[in-house]
Length: 241
Image (cartoon, rainbow, N blue to C red; front, side, top):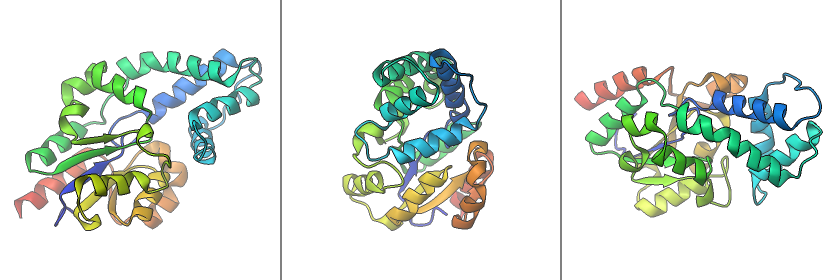
């Protein structure tokens, strides 16, 4: 898995941190706040993923996602106001609730201590990353993002988001490394598709919120881990060789 690898590229939401369910809670609270019709109890995470993929090429896909929510749930507000409310709701979750998945920080520390370059490549927006770095004590106390990652590329770093491989090409160019010297860690189908499109090897970290695409994820991936403890054991085993 790590043979000849120099750079480990991590996704963030659903991979390193338990956040997908939190964003579902945030969007549910948003819908209940702005909507004039009852929440329809759909799979809100799947709906969000589908819409963000649909709006991938727009100037601000989250703004368009908020427009969609406003239209679907009959909100009498402009999309800019809905987006503002969404981030006001999100603030309390981002600062106090979001945390690493169990043992994720141990994996980061082991890799960094053994000379691997760690990179964060995420579609999370820049403001959220800033909150994690400056205000989220769960993350700061375990493995501060700005100390553990040599590069942090968030939504604003590229024009084309995953599954477009632009973010991975940017990492290759910035670090002057070859595809075969990198390994991507992802949880979602859209992230796996970006890895495949980049030509970089990848492994999959299980996240229950990707179960809707599990069959396709299983088909595309060769190496999967149920949790970071499994990954930690595998890395420890390989480093002993």
